[in-house]
Length: 224
Image (cartoon, rainbow, N blue to C red; front, side, top):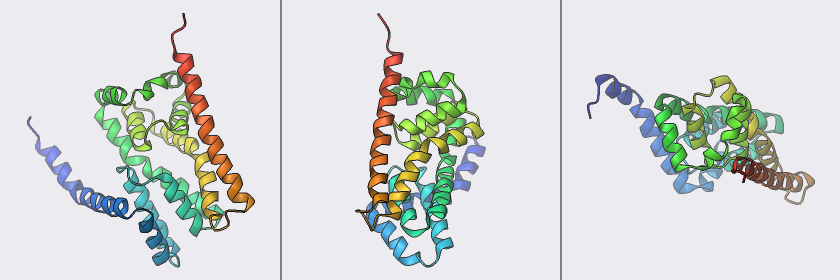
């Protein structure tokens, strides 16, 4: 296979970022929660620096499967007041949604077909694709059948318009993010009403997403 010079130069231009992402991902995956705890302990008095570090972690998550959203939501909620925590988590979601989307968009329809073979659950949501791009993206992200990084690639490969993709994606993740952030804010008082209600809401959201998925599968099933 012949590789043109443009592809080589493009790869070399992004090579430092790729190396950095790989190293940081390895560090976070290897250390898990302790990596976040160390970050909080070291920079808790430097909140702008901590915010920048968290945005970097959201960026890492966009190309890695070793860092769950929940951990980041809770960590930010445990450091910042509710308003700032919600703003930072929304910004983090937006940062996370960039790289996979444009990768999928450049990959084209052939990559979509490969994703449908590897993740057939995307096909179960085909009925939603007949609606607006915002609604389709919202349902894909809210139901959360597969890792968000993969669904971002999938939506990009379908060429969902960028603004609709961002709007639907953020709205789809918003309910779970708010509830999980509240868990982070009240995590030191697990017997508090805020913590208990937030946990219940998270469980209900999981149940609701499952019900919506099963209903969509049933509607797509052939009728005799």
